[in-house]
Image (cartoon, rainbow, N blue to C red):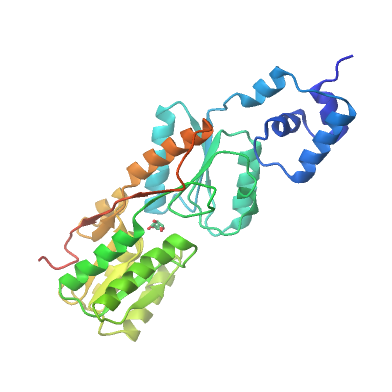
Length: 327
Ligand code: RIB
């Protein structure tokens, strides 16, 4: 009697789907699983037929999206744009929030990779997630660099931070503080490095303050209050995201300071949510919709086993506002 895929599964102690995934090297597979399945195939002299290969090669038309938090305006709009565009192309999506929770990210990866999604788009912050190393699945990262073998789509963090810092200097600010989220990987440090470079070029002392962009507002208020207590001469602030910029704005006003007369303030991201709440906030606009479009294009190339670049960087734009002086 012909040996069936289910016989191999029984011999290896795994599910038939897992045997199929080992045959097609799809989804996250431990070396132990691969070894056990291949040993069972040899022992039973099983040779996968076209249907087993075809079964796994079929697309699920489902894409996994992992972000730190859809409650953040930037990641919320990014997720919205990804879902909208993927839906228009016939894909379903599975969305997960993984802010500062590496174990949740690993759990999600285990499910998504096992769930036979066709690919993953990840913009998460957690570091050292081993599942990315042998995912056997098309993956594209957005905003945050994960691994050299995972193509990354981001906006030009260096250009953005240079533009923001130079905009305040050009408008007369001398004592400029850079606030940033806790540096997680290379893209975060790119912004801070660009700020420091511009400040040093203009012979000014760079000062940076870090706060978790997902911290509670009360915590951010306390941090920014302490910052202004420590540096009362501050006349310019470059915030690394618009949410923080809004909190800083309220702290400045609560101290009787005028914006931009006393302190000029510029944010980062330019998400529609924050722009509709605070239209006057000057900011560096990231091309969120274009980042989503490009990430999907790159992922589709990976799914079709086409060559892709390692890095894609899109330009940003300075959006003027009432929180910086008019030139
Ligand atoms: O607002 C969230 C921030 O985290 C954005 O600037 C995004 O680029 C990431 O750095």
